Amino acid sequence: MRYFCFVKILFVANRMPYPPYRGDKLKIFNLAKELCVNHELHLITIAENQEDLDSVSVLQKTFFLDDAAAQTSNSSATTNNDRSTTTNPNEGIQLFDSIQYVYRPKWRSILSSAIGLFSKRPIQVSFFRSKPFANKLEHLLDNHHFDVIHVQHLRMAQYFEDGAPSNAILDLPDAFSLYWKRRESAAKNPFDKAFRGLEYKRLANYEKLMLPKFAQSLVCSTEDRDYLINAGITNVDVLPNGVNLKSFSPQGSDAIIKNRILFTGNMDYAPNVDAVQYFVDEIFPLILEKHPESHFVIAGQRPVKAVLDLASDRIQVTGFIEDLSLEYAKANVVVSPLRIGAGTQNKVLEALAMNQAVVCSNVGFLGLGLKSGEGILMGETAHEFANHVVSILTSEELRKRLGETGGQHVRSTFVWSGISQQLLSYFENIKS
Image 1 (cartoon, rainbow, N blue to C red):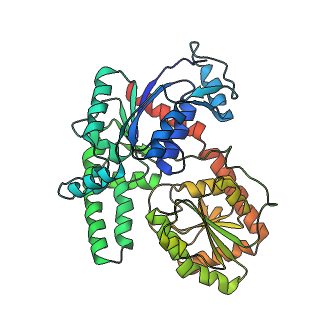
Image 2: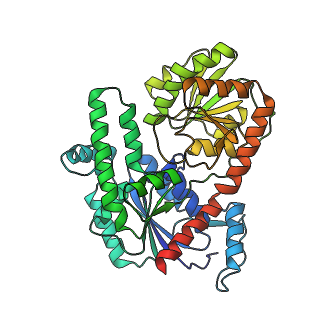
């Protein structure tokens, strides 16, 4: 059964949104699952490996709806007599009506980045620069009408340097220049620091150039929005990240392994590598002094050598985990000691959604809408961070109180059904 479509949406994505294991993939995939019920969705993106090519056929197959998506459909259906009023969550539906892509192996992107060193564009933008993609996108826009165009990431904004259509929204995971500013601050090697500083300046200039070209720009946290507004960019608002409550829901305390400290993330991602190195070098020894029974688990795919080398009798590096919710359920406390980053961290949302007690840095704290001590604990120094972890490990009452408060907040604020409705309201604003 095909549902009435009142908005025809084109997603211009920097990555194939499947499998949904990282932030940019997660957002498009989950928004599509919500919006496909009542809207006609089309995708154009870049494929860089065999996994991406295999994902095309998967995304064109039928997905089963979450209950939330079905409820959203039924709720919105009552406001429009032309729209279907019956949506069965057990009935499958196709996410995208069409998928177009350009195959671009990673070596070509690296070459493009090297060439981009001699331009004024950020390296991150040059990495995704593709003439075949530009031609395919231009042909698509010239020959098809879309009610709204959802452009994901500053990397894809480059295809609208000559001007974006009046019905185009730019959706950013974070203020990219803020992320690189923090990477510059964290760099120790002089050459690395100079490179990151150059990229930060290029990104800051590029944000000022590109964001005003769109009818609306979105970031996932108020901190990122305020940073961009302070830089003189006025057409920016907030669209939060979300969490899949069917995958990440409270499991109770029976599964918890006492004294187990957990970090999750893609372990080839530089900020995650830095975070676990910082935790192991500066925080974990302080925890062991006060609570020697503690052990630390690093769970996430593609761990680089620097992460694998951290393994010891008290530190486990798992590699790929099929179901991260099982790892969260076993944790006595979840940590996010990030020093580099911007936007809202999915790992923190997932842990909170499962009623897990979380200790995070000020970077991991961004965009949550919580206060330290109310649903989460924030440690700005290694000693403060370690003390918070030990407090949770030694107090079941504190662990439960933090988990229940944080979980309730996330389940009421960061749900994909509600976030998709926020996105629709932005669509309606630029259409009117």
